Image (cartoon, rainbow, N blue to C red; front, side, top):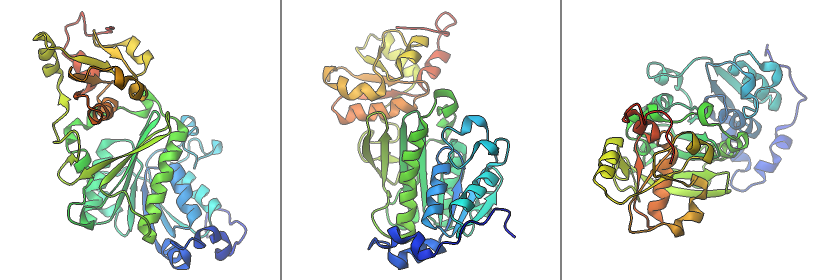
Length: 367
């Protein structure tokens, strides 16, 4: 007997009518949806709205993998959980909500943390894997398991107002990239910024999760063009969407042209300035962050304001951009290169630079 309360019986034809009327879906597509087995890794900011969308669409079997419990600070963005669920396992809370959304769906709870040791075992039997987690350690473990099982991986990431979505399925065809083609340097995973540190807009999670859910539906039914070989970048501040082409081998098709192009280490940056070379240094963090700590001589142009500032930059002077750990500034450097300004990203961000400074400069500096 199900531990979740049954809801009013609804005829399948009535429930999914708005989907099946689409020629790209139809009754045959709905049958594929009902037969699909989808594993969602992470029942947090991305996993929450995504799980609700997949359940509502009628995905037959949904695996929910998470080892955490619901906290009050989750509720502003993790919409699969409710106030009464605080302190309860996220898998239990999510399963209860999904059962109320659609009693047709079977929910399998995996209350554990996905690791390299258990990734292959826990992903067995699923047709599509979705990664909505927030650590690179898990990203790599999920991606490697999906590649070994030769099943498509829908990946998403969100931070502050920004998000990215792609589909990785190296076995789908010659040249199809995997997650490691987008992030080839696993050693840099520890420098990634976190939502806990810099924040995230809850509605940004919903936007990115909506795109991820659409990718799952395309893969399951077989309509449209999945984001294979493309990374969709979402900017909720400007309501802008753009694509970055990606190829197998660890390099985007346009700048940087190689895995190491467009980067400068803190040591190289200090040597550059010591030699007196002209360089424009741009801090793409928010003004409050810049006031707390900044590289002397740098100018503060938040990443979402770059578009309006590009015309005022000297195209003949090389640019170094930085943020806290090098994540936001990597996107900014690519943008500047695309618009004719030679820019490199400070690897590791201001944190890496501060670690190299003597005590007098190693605390809080400002321009």
